[in-house]
Image (cartoon, rainbow, N blue to C red):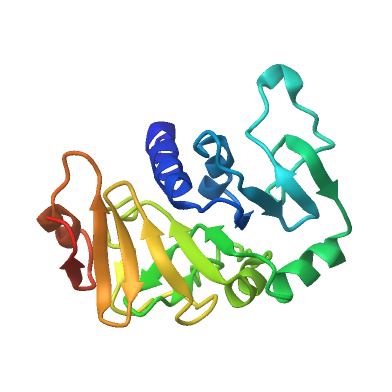
Length: 214
């Protein structure tokens, strides 16, 4: 996925975060969201290594590698930010104090099952990190990911084929094609990227979609 596509997905998700929300940014694509919060909206970003109050990504000349997020990327802190112990950070997550967890994923199932820690392949090291805690502890989980794999296979499936991180936790999916809400009645396409129509999205999705927009 090229950087422009990643930034488009991050910006679209940022648009939907409500004022005053406490939001964990997962490793990878979700970390970009902090740079796209609309002006005047107060969103408090969390990283599980013990940071609360993350700001936009630093300019190259202001990078401090002693100030990093859980993915070891340099970050900035806004006025009023906190730095605290890893244990306290996970107490926040497990205690239900995170409103939204924005995570990457390998696969999402039609019922909201999440697979994002292992592909099950022997040559690929699994990476649990804080994903299982976040999936269980956050009030709502949103996934930001590319709609298909590098070889064009769907990532949004009837059932995940990779080991699950957590069952039925994903509430919304953001891709370069669409925004999809996971509902009791199935997957609902609630927004489409510019130049994309519903049939384009369905053609690249194994699970059946329902159209809130055409």
